[in-house]
Amino acid sequence: MSKFTDYIDGLADKTSTLAKDELKELIISAKKDKSEFVRLQAENVERWTVMLATGELTPAGFKKLVSKMDVLTKLETIKLEVAAKASAQRLADGIQKYVIDGLCKLI
Image 1 (cartoon, rainbow, N blue to C red):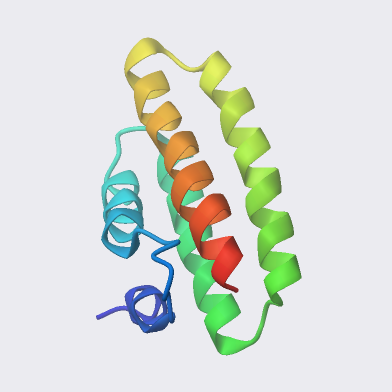
Image 2 (cartoon, helix red, strand yellow):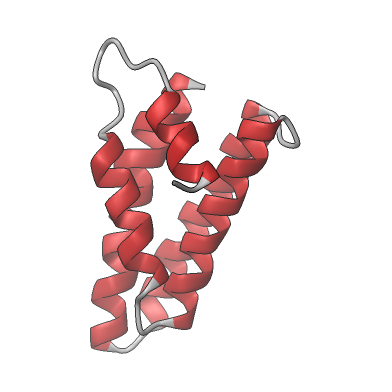
């Protein structure tokens, strides 16, 4: 297992705030996407999560980076071609649902 997966699996989530499997699947599929932008953003979320897990990034710093990425992803979605737009939109929706509304509430 990766450090990303280990960290997500290890989070105490008594209220089921975070859909852990869905977040992991979002990142796995986005890292394989045709769009370079989508792949890069997935790698960023994974890297920042590992940095959070190892203490290299504070929860506040993580939340700030993810919030900025959310805005960037929404703006990029507007510029992309139709196929890539769908992938970017799925990533943007997943970042909102699983990272901002889920993971950020747990850290």
